[in-house]
Image 1 (tube, rainbow, N blue to C red):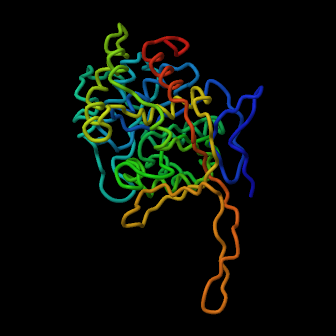
Image 2: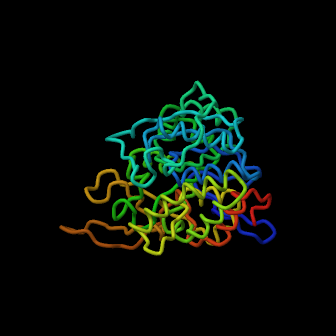
Image 3: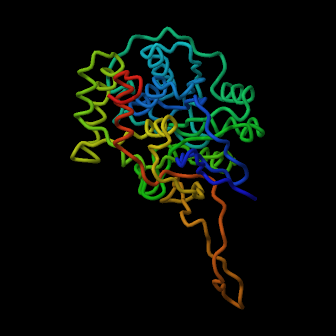
Length: 360
């Protein structure tokens, strides 16, 4: 088996991409063609609007998956966001209402009953695509093999179902950018919300052979959104900026009460979008091997990460096993170990304020 380094060089510049254990990740081309697979949600709403306002990305479709809220609420939110951004040209399709196994776990406490922090947008007029999310994912990738990046900011249910229904689809998928954690979790000591909601789906995706960039929790913690940022957006003349400032208030309240008394919130899904727009936001990117835990009593949903890319070897000797050294492990993903949080914050704020170059 071979793997291609997650880094390629252009005029001395290092750019971040996903890694596959079996195939080469092609060089970047802009605009990057993406499907946003999301569960909006406050942070996913921020990610969606960032993607829609960035000419480096061509958003082919938004597919929704049950996660932060029931999928019906999220799908309405996706339609509202497209109309707010003036992007009614983008396909929107409803996806899975339940994880592959178990019950849906939602987070209205964080996002509000409407998923947008209680901020009300007009009822959407844009129609849903007649196809479900799995079919849209398949059809776009099948028609554009090797071109489409799956930007997965929710549970990986839709993508796992697409790969199970169409076994040749992973080979035609250019890259997946998703979340996870190389260490501590968020909803449990080891698991982040989306892998905890559907660990079985995450396992399918991480074992698919598609090049994966896992924008993990430690990376997200390096890019922070504050009250000052929210106020600046709220005072803007731009409707999108004002909306993001408004929905951020509930999010920042929750973070200050439960996670960080200083009130610094992570962008989460928006950071992955930002790295797709500007790969130099990821200052240091490392290859890893990720296994997803689906059985553990205390570790369900953990993205168990092998950072050293080695594993101990043991050989039988009588009634025992003897350690005989280490053997290499092939990477199946990469992660941004060091992130330029200030660079991302400038990009995000600039795009919300509708600055063409993303700095304002």
